[in-house]
Structures are given as structure tokens and as C-alpha cells.
Length: 253
Ligand code: PEP
Image (cartoon, rainbow, N blue to C red; front, side, top):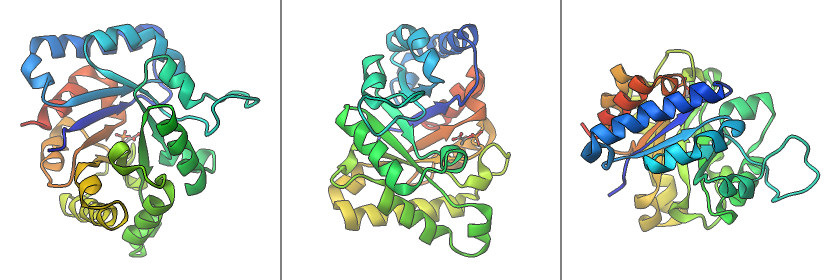
């Protein structure tokens, strides 16, 4: 049985005060609805500088914290970068790698994403490896082949179920557009089938595949009820505690 993972990607948003207030509001929900909160895994991925600010409050509320990216190397002359080891050191248990905004803005390719995911595993973190097609690729009927190539080339060999995959159609991120439940079901089933042939039945059955792309309280229940959808990676709606909590609760409705 795969526990649902509801992950919030705050992107480049939030001050110390806003980050703390957000985690405190989520923690209050977890306290008030203890048995509901025990039914799913809650994760927030703030900007790097806010990780130490929220770590203690998140830990006390059993809310996991994660980075939004990491460098493939453990340490060294890489100005401006943060390693997976550093993320683990400040209390992270997850890190997002290969988000489409990084693939686009920083020209990250599958090989780099794979190296980052490997570094995350070596540091004891669970990488959330993002894949997803652009609108042009979907229009050209290439969605599944693009996603399969990204999965094949971005996952570290032998990772088994230690990775989380996030299917995020690029055209649905931050746009208010959401993939139809049928499209999401088809892509998630294809990814699961691929994992079965590459990693074996057991690892495939245990690997969580998240959906991301304009998930909000009004569409979360329908998406999270799909057979191969094991949680959500939430951007905009994760900045509002009420919305993020409502999405998490929809995962166990
Ligand atoms: C994301 O940033 O991963 C994301 C899915 O954003 P949004 O929910 O805002 O579309």
C-alpha cells in the first residue's frame, strides 16, 4: 500500500515570517485532525534559506521538509549551489530534481537530473524526479514517448522505490490548466508499466508517482482518487495553508 505524499513546492516565494506562519498553520491542522494527518505524508519544499527557519516547527508537527534542487557534487567550488548532503544536514528528507522550471531556466537535461537524483540518494534523501511534456509535444502526440525517455534517463540505475516520480505536464504548471483525469491516468499507468519492466514488479508497486500541475482543492479529490496517483506536487496552492491542507485531506477522502 503506497502512502499518499502531498508535497508543496513554494518556489521562490516567502519571507521568514510568511514561511513560519504557513508551517504553523499546517501544524495546527495536523494537531486538530491527528488521525487524518497520520494517513498521508505532508512535505514542504521552501526556498533554501527558509529551511533552517521552519525545520523545528515542521519536525514537531511531523511535516517533512525538502529542497527544490541540489548540486550533483557533495561539496566544492560551485558558487551559489547547495548539495544534497547540506540539505540532509539541515533536516531535509526529500529534494525535488528536474523540475521543468529548472529544465527550462537552467537548461538542465536528463543526465544532470539523474546525477542530482543519485547525489540525493547517496545523501540519504528521497529525490522527487519531475517529468512532463510541453504543450507542443502533447499536440504532436509525443507526450508518452517524451515522458518515457525522461523517466528512463533521469532515474538513477538501481534506485528501486527510493525515488518518487512527479508527472507534471509543463503546460499545466502555474497556468490553472489541469490534465484531464483520463490523461493523468494514462500517463501514470504508462510510468508504472515502465518501472515494472525496468525495476521489477516489487519496486514498481512501491514507487510513488505524484501528479502536479494546477492542483487545487476543487480538483484534488478526482485526481488523487486515480489508481496510480500516489500524491500531488503542489505549487501555487501550497502557499495557502487552507488550500494545501484541503488538498491533503482530499487524498484520503
Ligand atoms: C509545481 O510547481 O510543481 C506546480 C505543479 O505548480 P502549480 O501547482 O502552481 O501548477
